[in-house]
Image 1 (cartoon, rainbow, N blue to C red):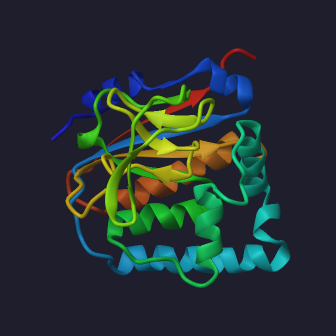
Image 2: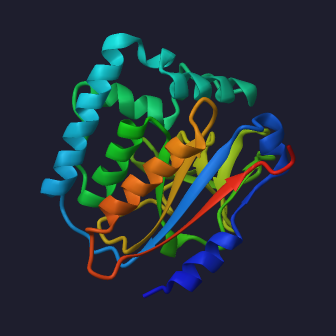
Amino acid sequence: MATITELEAYLDDARVAPEVFDLRPDYRALLLAVDGIEPGESDERSEDLLVRAERAAVAALAAQPVEELPHVAAWREAYRAFGAKPQRTRNSLEALTRRAETGLPRVNRLTDIYNAISVIHQLPLGGEDLQRYRGAPRLTRADGTEAFDTASGGESVIERPDAGEVVWGDDEGVTCRRWNWRQGRRTALTDSTRTALFILDALEPLTDAALTAAADDLAEALGHLGPDITIARRVLANTSN
């Protein structure tokens, strides 16, 4: 079991490269490192969250199209800034919100929780198996040589990100392409994950208070996944202004 001191020390090494803040000075990442998770199937608590998320999506989309939702629109703009086409590669928030209107997937209680929080609070939220990480997480702009472990046609393949693409990674390679578009297989959450890293992504107009509220709700929900849950958090933000 990891102690709070160990989790905090790990998060202390997380970094966002200056060139990412040059692209979007308003970017903030709130990281949660969580230990003591007891894996389990979808349950009543996770189902309640998913139903809340689906209802929230239906209400939001009754007023405007998904691409005009404020935070979705901000992420579409960010994707264009580094050369991605948001109509073809949708950020995780937009992809989940589109699915929520007709029903979110039921995977396991850990995945269900963070998918639901993402939709309810309208922000991209990624979950990773921390025990599969090699070194601390860092957000950079790729040079195009990094390795990304994924699948194509049912087969394992190694892809390379586009030069200039914004990617999360560790010492071994890319863990998530295009900021928050597609997570790699190497560090993906599984049915046996006990230690996880969650990354909550924010751009204006999402406020710091809204980002904190999302993290609080996520932490509260994760706290029910075992008797010895330990959670550390850290915010990475632009300090040059």
